[in-house]
Amino acid sequence: MTGYWLMKSEPHVYPWEQLKEDKSTHWDGVRNYQARNIMRDQMKEGDLVLFYHSNCKPPHVAGIAKVCREAYPDFTAQDSSSKYFDPKASPDNPRWMMVDIEPVCDLNPIGLPELKSNGDLEGMPLLQRGQRLSVQPVSAEHFRIVCEMGNLSEIPS
Image (tube, rainbow, N blue to C red; front, top):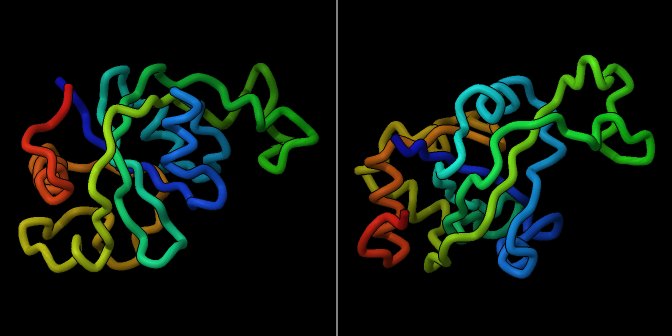
C-alpha cells in the first residue's frame, strides 16, 4: 500500500526545479529524530511525496515526488567538511538516515494560505500549529485533495 508524505525544502537550498533537473536526489541533512524515524521506519520505495517549499512567500506545494530508494545512512553526518556533520555518527552507529526521491509531476503551486482555507484539509499535520517537521505523514485523503487543488485529476502512480 502506498504511503503519502510531505517533505520540506527551502527553495534557495534545493528547489523543485533542481530535483526535476537532477532526476533524483538523496534527502540528506535531516537532524530531527522524529523525521529520521519516519524515513527509516515508515517510508517505502514507491511512496508519494508532496514537495513543499518552506521559508518563502508564500510557502507552497510545488510538485509530487516518489521515494526511489528506502532509508540508508546519511553519509553527510560522517563527513567533517559537511554542514550536516555529526561527530557522534560512525559507520557502526550512523545515527542519521536519508531516502532518495525522484520527481513525478508538477502541481500548480498551492500556497499555505490556500491549504489553510480548505476545510477538507483539517487535521493535516502541515496545518497544525507548531508543526515544524521537515518530513511528515499525509493521509491518502489529504494527498488526494492537494492533488486536486494542484489541478491533477488523479493521484499519480
